[in-house]
Length: 102
Image: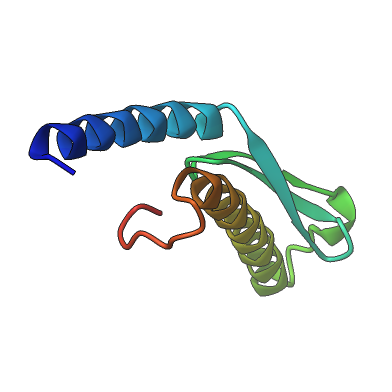
């Protein structure tokens, strides 16, 4: 394989990665905690879009619990978004894990 072929393949891979990242930005996943009482929506690019909290879990005397539930819901959504990105990346990279991409 000549250097020109390698460069063309690298450019093609770079183009496909940019397309995949744009595609991920348009997808979202929802994480939840407290039996769905707290929900967080995150894009495939790991941007937090929204957090919704059921009034039933809002207790002024127990703010720590609410903070824990929000943290758990956001972490759940982030985990799901990373898994979604890894699945997409696996298709692009032919199953190889490429360090630093996600």
